[in-house]
Amino acid sequence: QVQLVESGGGLVQPGGSLRLSCAASGFIFSIDAMGWYRQAPGKERELVARITTGGITRYVDSVKGRFTISRDNAKNTLVLQMNSLKPEDTAVYYCNRDQNSRSLFPWGQGTQVTVSS
Image 1 (cartoon, rainbow, N blue to C red):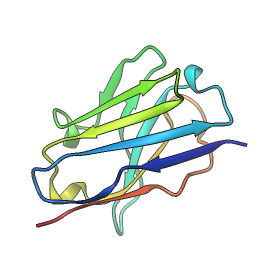
Image 2 (cartoon, one colour):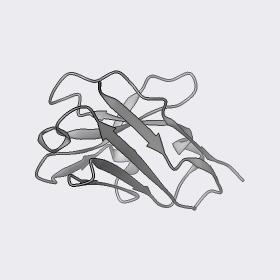
Image 3 (cartoon, rainbow, N blue to C red):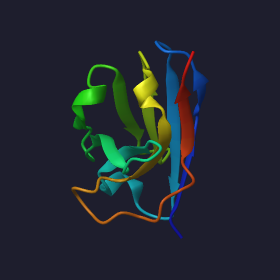
Image 4 (cartoon, one colour):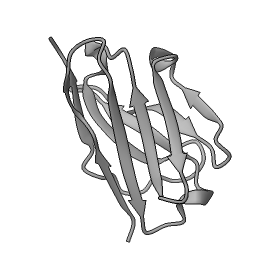
C-alpha cells in the first residue's frame, strides 16, 4: 500500500534552516506531481510547494525565495530545503501528490517544524 514517511523536522531558531525528506513507496513516484503541505495549529492544511514530474516547481508566496522543493525519482524521495525560517513557518509538514494534479493519498504522520527562539 502507499506509504509516505516524512522526516527531518525539529526545533530551530528564526533564520535557521531545515531539510525535510519524504520517503515514498507503494506507487510509481516518478509519474506523479508531488507537493509539500503544512498545517499550523488552528489552521487548514495548505500546499506550500509543488514539483512536476519534469522538475518544474511552484511555491506559495509566503515561502518563495526561502524554500526549495526537489525530487529524486531513483530514490523515490521528495525533499524540502527550508532556509531563513520564520516563526510563522511553524507547522506539521506533510508530503503528498500535488492536489491540483491528482487525488491525494492517505496522509502520513508528518514531521513537526517549530521555529522559535
